[in-house]
Length: 312
Image 1 (cartoon, helix red, strand yellow):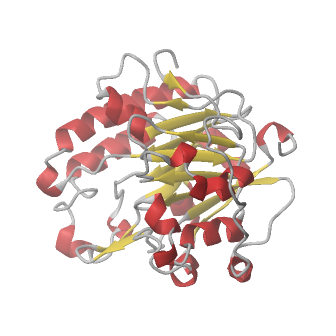
Image 2 (cartoon, rainbow, N blue to C red):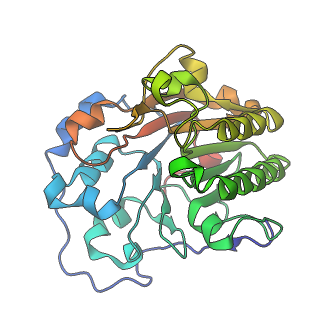
C-alpha cells in the first residue's frame, strides 16, 4: 500500500476540546434493539450506512436518529458514508461516538467517509489508492478506506455517483480501473471484506421499476455495470446479500425519481465466504428512526473476531 495516505487513530485525548458535560444515553433507543438480531458470542458485527450528512442524521430535528441506531444495534465496526462534516474529529456533539468506538478514522481532505471500530486494527487506516493510481488523489483519499485486521482487509468506499446523463462517468471509470487493480494487490496478502455505498446496480432486480430507468440513470449505465462485473470476475468476489437472496428484491436507498435501489452492500473475497454468517438490509430502521437518511443500514456478521482479541 505504498503511496497511500496512512491515518493515525483519532483517539480520546488527542485534538479534542475540553469535555464539558457528558451526553446522557438515549434510553428510548433500547426499545429499538428488539428488531436487531441477538448478539452471538464469537462473531463480528459490521454495518455500513450512508447518512447523507452525519450532523443532520444526529440532530434533534431528526430525533437523534443516528445515535439511537448506534446504541440499539451496537455493531463492532461501522463504516459511515457521506459523512459531510469537516469538524467531526473535534466535535463535542459526537463524544458519545468516541466513547463507544476507541478507534476512529475519517477521510481527508473531504470528510465523506469514516470507519469506527471497537477492535484495534493491525495498523492505522489507509485512505486512497497507491501512488500509481490515475484517480485524482483528493477523490480517492476521501472515498476509499482500508483497515487491516489479522485475517482480512476491511475496505470501505463511498464511490462517486456518475451524475446526471453520465457527466462524471469518465472519472468514475478511471476510479473503477484503479480500484480493481488495488483489490488485486490487497488479495495477494489476505482476503477482502468490502462494504459501503457502491453507486452501482449490478442487476435489474437491484432497482425498483427498472423498465423505466434501466440504462438511463447513474448506477445503471451499461459501462458501470460492465466495470463492476469485470471487478467481481477478475478478483473472484461475491456479493453476499445477493448470494443469500438470489431472487430478492430489497433496496437500501429510495428517492422520488427511481424509487428503490440497492446501492449499499457487502462484497467479500470468495476464499473468505465461509466466514460470513449473514447479511441483512435493516429495513426496520426506516420506521424506528424516520427521516435519518434516504438510505438505510446494511449489516454483515462474520464468524470470529479480529485476531480473536478482546475489545480494547
